[in-house]
Image (cartoon, rainbow, N blue to C red):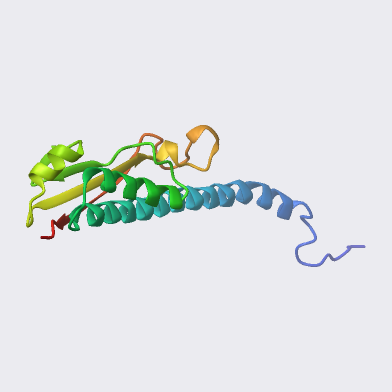
Length: 149
């Protein structure tokens, strides 16, 4: 006598095997989305910090000190390390202090502020590790504005 089985009951463990194969792939894709999403979020915050720094430098009475303080505050408010100084240039010449900034930043001068972090310093994974974005990958942005009168 032959026993008939329902469709799918002849292989009772196949669902567990399929899950064991597919689950790590989905988990890896999920972690990759988190990793790349974190990088994109940091690039947005770095871009905002560069814009805020350029605005602080471009207003009347702006200085190198106010620019670096504005960038540091913006990065700190975003929960990012503010350990790196931004690169400030006036008409393409780098300035590193208030005196050189005041001498070069005349009304109409182009002031550019570049902020840069490495992905390893902002990664959510332990030890600055990353899955899809290299730990030494720079996340940077530059904003230029004209010095006001």
